[in-house]
Length: 137
Image (tube, rainbow, N blue to C red; front, side, top):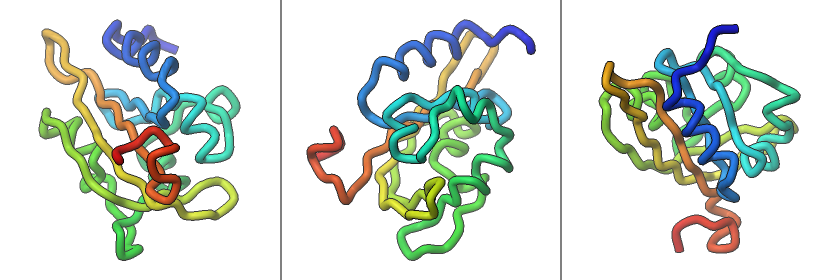
Protein backbone atom coordinates (compact mmCIF):
# COMPACT_ATOMS: atom_id res chain seq x y z
CA UNK A 1 0.00 0.00 0.00
CA UNK A 2 1.41 3.38 -0.98
CA UNK A 3 1.79 6.33 1.35
CA UNK A 4 -1.21 8.69 1.29
CA UNK A 5 -0.71 12.40 0.65
CA UNK A 6 -0.40 14.43 3.85
CA UNK A 7 -3.61 16.32 2.97
CA UNK A 8 -5.61 13.08 3.10
CA UNK A 9 -3.95 12.04 6.35
CA UNK A 10 -4.85 15.37 7.95
CA UNK A 11 -8.40 15.22 6.57
CA UNK A 12 -8.81 11.72 7.98
CA UNK A 13 -7.66 12.96 11.39
CA UNK A 14 -10.19 15.78 11.24
CA UNK A 15 -13.07 13.54 10.14
CA UNK A 16 -12.28 10.92 12.77
CA UNK A 17 -12.87 13.52 15.48
CA UNK A 18 -16.29 14.60 14.14
CA UNK A 19 -19.54 13.23 15.52
CA UNK A 20 -21.23 13.99 12.18
CA UNK A 21 -21.06 11.27 9.48
CA UNK A 22 -18.34 11.93 6.89
CA UNK A 23 -16.66 10.23 3.90
CA UNK A 24 -13.19 10.88 2.45
CA UNK A 25 -12.17 10.04 -1.12
CA UNK A 26 -8.83 10.27 -2.88
CA UNK A 27 -8.17 12.05 -6.16
CA UNK A 28 -9.62 9.08 -8.10
CA UNK A 29 -12.82 8.94 -6.07
CA UNK A 30 -11.89 5.81 -4.10
CA UNK A 31 -13.36 5.81 -0.60
CA UNK A 32 -10.31 5.92 1.67
CA UNK A 33 -12.06 6.56 5.00
CA UNK A 34 -15.35 7.15 6.74
CA UNK A 35 -15.73 8.01 10.39
CA UNK A 36 -17.50 6.18 13.21
CA UNK A 37 -20.60 8.36 12.86
CA UNK A 38 -20.90 7.26 9.22
CA UNK A 39 -20.27 3.66 10.30
CA UNK A 40 -23.28 3.88 12.60
CA UNK A 41 -25.40 4.96 9.64
CA UNK A 42 -24.07 2.48 7.05
CA UNK A 43 -23.87 -0.44 9.45
CA UNK A 44 -20.19 -1.35 9.44
CA UNK A 45 -16.98 0.30 10.66
CA UNK A 46 -14.46 1.43 8.06
CA UNK A 47 -11.79 -0.84 9.56
CA UNK A 48 -14.02 -3.85 8.87
CA UNK A 49 -14.74 -2.83 5.30
CA UNK A 50 -11.58 -1.02 4.18
CA UNK A 51 -10.97 1.13 1.14
CA UNK A 52 -13.40 0.82 -1.74
CA UNK A 53 -13.12 1.77 -5.40
CA UNK A 54 -15.60 4.42 -6.54
CA UNK A 55 -17.72 1.87 -8.40
CA UNK A 56 -17.88 -0.37 -5.32
CA UNK A 57 -18.91 2.22 -2.75
CA UNK A 58 -21.48 3.85 -5.01
CA UNK A 59 -23.04 0.43 -5.69
CA UNK A 60 -22.87 -0.57 -2.02
CA UNK A 61 -24.44 2.63 -0.69
CA UNK A 62 -26.83 3.10 -3.64
CA UNK A 63 -26.98 6.90 -3.63
CA UNK A 64 -30.28 8.14 -5.08
CA UNK A 65 -31.89 11.51 -5.68
CA UNK A 66 -34.90 12.63 -3.59
CA UNK A 67 -37.23 10.93 -6.11
CA UNK A 68 -35.42 7.60 -5.64
CA UNK A 69 -33.58 7.56 -8.99
CA UNK A 70 -29.99 6.28 -8.80
CA UNK A 71 -27.38 9.04 -8.85
CA UNK A 72 -24.45 8.31 -11.15
CA UNK A 73 -20.95 8.59 -9.74
CA UNK A 74 -20.31 11.67 -11.88
CA UNK A 75 -23.33 13.47 -10.37
CA UNK A 76 -22.62 12.82 -6.68
CA UNK A 77 -21.84 15.91 -4.59
CA UNK A 78 -18.56 14.29 -3.51
CA UNK A 79 -17.48 13.70 -7.11
CA UNK A 80 -18.55 17.17 -8.21
CA UNK A 81 -16.52 18.72 -5.38
CA UNK A 82 -13.55 16.57 -6.35
CA UNK A 83 -13.54 17.45 -10.04
CA UNK A 84 -15.12 20.93 -10.05
CA UNK A 85 -12.90 22.07 -7.19
CA UNK A 86 -15.69 23.75 -5.26
CA UNK A 87 -18.08 23.03 -2.41
CA UNK A 88 -21.38 21.34 -3.29
CA UNK A 89 -24.50 20.83 -1.17
CA UNK A 90 -27.55 18.70 -2.00
CA UNK A 91 -30.19 16.32 -0.70
CA UNK A 92 -30.11 12.64 -1.61
CA UNK A 93 -30.80 9.15 -0.30
CA UNK A 94 -28.26 6.65 0.99
CA UNK A 95 -28.77 2.89 1.20
CA UNK A 96 -27.19 1.15 4.16
CA UNK A 97 -26.03 -2.40 4.81
CA UNK A 98 -29.41 -3.69 5.98
CA UNK A 99 -31.15 -2.22 2.91
CA UNK A 100 -32.66 0.74 4.77
CA UNK A 101 -32.69 4.01 2.83
CA UNK A 102 -31.98 7.30 4.63
CA UNK A 103 -32.73 10.78 3.35
CA UNK A 104 -29.61 12.88 3.87
CA UNK A 105 -28.20 16.32 3.17
CA UNK A 106 -24.62 16.33 1.92
CA UNK A 107 -21.99 19.06 1.97
CA UNK A 108 -18.91 18.09 -0.04
CA UNK A 109 -15.60 19.96 -0.08
CA UNK A 110 -12.51 19.48 -2.26
CA UNK A 111 -9.10 19.02 -0.63
CA UNK A 112 -6.38 21.00 -2.38
CA UNK A 113 -2.59 20.83 -2.34
CA UNK A 114 0.10 22.71 -4.20
CA UNK A 115 0.01 20.12 -6.99
CA UNK A 116 -3.79 20.16 -7.40
CA UNK A 117 -6.77 18.38 -5.90
CA UNK A 118 -5.87 15.54 -3.51
CA UNK A 119 -9.37 14.34 -2.73
CA UNK A 120 -12.66 15.45 -1.26
CA UNK A 121 -14.68 15.02 1.89
CA UNK A 122 -18.42 14.85 2.37
CA UNK A 123 -20.23 15.56 5.60
CA UNK A 124 -23.83 14.42 5.74
CA UNK A 125 -26.83 14.58 7.99
CA UNK A 126 -29.75 12.15 8.13
CA UNK A 127 -32.78 14.39 7.51
CA UNK A 128 -35.19 12.17 9.45
CA UNK A 129 -33.11 12.59 12.61
CA UNK A 130 -33.39 16.39 12.47
CA UNK A 131 -31.34 18.64 14.77
CA UNK A 132 -30.30 15.80 17.09
CA UNK A 133 -28.12 14.37 14.27
CA UNK A 134 -25.93 17.47 14.38
CA UNK A 135 -27.12 18.69 11.00
CA UNK A 136 -28.75 21.90 9.85
CA UNK A 137 -31.72 23.06 11.87
